[in-house]
Length: 572
Image (cartoon, rainbow, N blue to C red; front, side, top):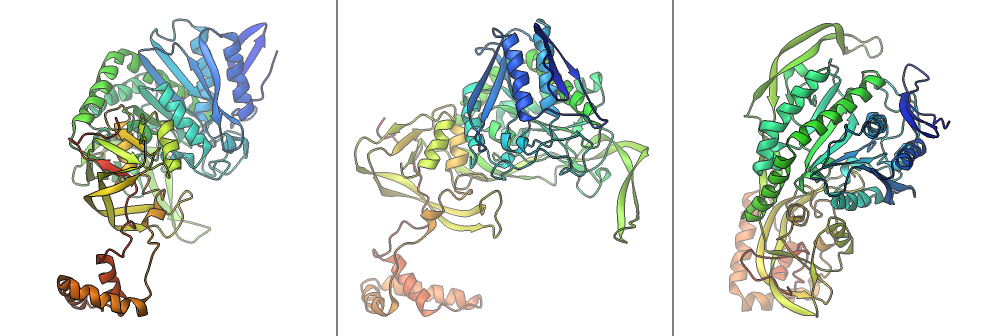
């Protein structure tokens, strides 16, 4: 008998036994990375015809990222489950090992035409950094991994920028698996309340189109209804408007940096399950497994609708002239939801001497509370016929390739007319965030210009399944575009300048040749004076310099060019 020191172990005695609970303490146990890999390896060895278990690529810690699958690769419904993106939140690690064993032990448990993929432990480096206490507010398990990966990155902010090898491997794995439904398993932080499970879903307004409407009107009500039938009721993720849930809650906007926001770029319905941190670990594991079972049952019931709607979604997206690339909560659209909570008490702290919050588990309430879950677009872009990516931006091309982007290459050096985006207003955060100084683009001006291309530069037509991924990453206005994540900061910098004492004579000649520049200069000086500013000598000379052919003309220029819609795509 092989005994693995983990909360869910596999017993092998000639043939695979079953997953059982082996809690050595009231907190419970979760497997180490190696124990999880051993468990899936044992499952695959026992069921080689029904399963696959593969290393999909490397992680930052130098160990592989694995994928375990049950069911045929040509299934009509494909569900992908990601575990331990935050290894201190390992409910899904245990739940998936137990569930996989149950599905394989009962041939009728996995319906025909379904493939389920399970990532045993996505954050391998964080999983190897075991500890007992860094999640100070959480009830168990006895030991668990760390939130940051081997580079101290939060991988649930890395799905677009792919600073980690984990994320780049995941991008390719996700694209190859092509899930219809994606689930990322987590444990919550925040308020206290009776519910064992809360849920973040792909925001329906942001998902948009027929798929977003169906998600909100059909699938979500069924998921909540089935969870309540089978156990304690599930509630939307408790993101309180104020300090406690009775003030109301709002949906969480999962932009493409997050797992479910990334999934939406591929027209995949995404869910983040958030088991409640203060419930015992075994309850959290069971609630997570119950949610996965409900997702499977509802997915099977609607598998034809899901495939049809995803196809319609992709087609509808390509038909649009413009698409939204940033959103905000609509605070005027206030709905309500029935919610059960604990009474909140405020008392004096013996430590700080200030008032502190305490939830009274002996006093519960149920009432309708405000629920804000409508989001509206804040920025939109025109949909081009194609993007052109110069080969110099190889890190971008690497990420595009991982997402299944199809392209052709420029056969020889040439120049063509293309649309160029000039970044007129932008700002970057003063403090680093996940390894970057995140940049917001506030104003863009687009013009048709002659651009130089070189043999090997890349032309990407939009008429392909990954069109939304392309638009939201390659348009500078995108909330999680490559521009926002500093991939193109060097393109913003001016490289050539002038010496003022030499340029004085040249500026005089330019003003004599272009009197309208002088008038424009005077208008700009007056505009600044009226706002309480002065235009210094260097600024005045630079005003003239920037209007002349002496200026390089490429600073503050987005280095990705576009072929406008309705224009023939070159080199096809």
